[in-house]
Amino acid sequence: TLDRIHQGLTEAGLEYVDLGGVVPNPRLGLVKEGIRLCKEERVDFLLPIGGGSAIDSAKGIGYGLANDFELEDLLLGKTATDKIAPIGCISTIAATGSETSNSMVITIEDGMLKRSYNHDCARPKFAIMNPELTYTLPAYQTSSGASDIMMHTMERYFTNTKDVDLIDRMAEGLLVSVREAALTAVKDPENYEARATLMWAGSLSHNGLTGTGRVSDFASHKIEHELGGMFDVAHGAGLAAVWGSWARYVCSSGTARFAALARNLFDIRIPDDEACAYAGINAMEALFREIGMPVRIHELGITLSDEQIDLLARKCSYDHSRTIGKIKALDEEDMKNIYRQAR
Image (cartoon, rainbow, N blue to C red; front, side, top):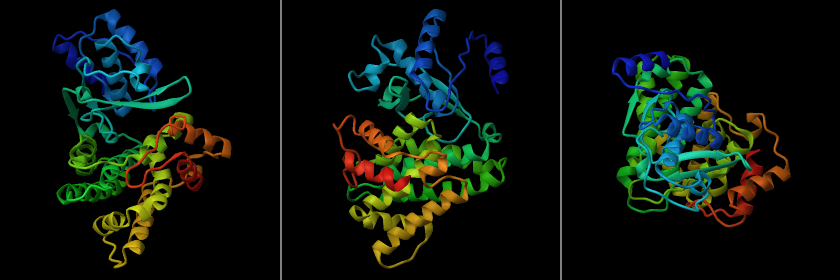
């Protein structure tokens, strides 16, 4: 793929310089290296090739080129900006949706803090999305990406906002399509239609569409981000590992919404909302297992100690200074309880 891109740039008369070394849960250190390289080479356009880690690294570099501040300050909420160097992207995995989202997530090595910054200026100018580039993904990465796509949609679906039926139906349809495509793609990796569905759904799930007109939850993402920062797990797999425990912990605060998801995603027809809701949570975990995803943290190869749980919750609460979630506001003690149930 890289050779093809080099050839195309050369034939178009465009000069370029490469930067490799992006890793999952992308590091601020590489972003800073990229800023230095781009200033040295007078780069005026960024073209990440890969998934969310590559694209978010490029977004970080873009912020660094267009502004005069330390990236740590942006990620830690000490400053803000609406300026970024222009970015396009070539996607090679369906997962984060960073190719059309306003979001950037970077890990600060000092303390291994996984932090984000969101602004519409960070939406790439274009995204080249060829499903054939995803054929060679390992099944685990395909499933991890599909889990992330579903989670991006569910984080917005679980809301206390009323009268959002239209977007609910869009979200439910997207989830059904992703479920079917993921089950196909892990068994038939060169199935173009399944790959195309996953790639398109990845963008639709995180470009803001399924969050229209509502307040989103995103507690599961915040809980997983600390796991990713501490243990470097694949993001979608980490989400699958904590989601069921979060869902059971908050279900009583949004029983009707959990029941609606169960009925419209899994066709569960239990009349009682509470029983239907918990059956839907079980069905979601069964789907994660069917595509090879973990549903508990120990299935990631991590044995959490009580001390690590305390640290994860402290980081997630920003040193006791915030709650997370909207279906149910979660304080630091709630976070500890969810980590305990998920381990």
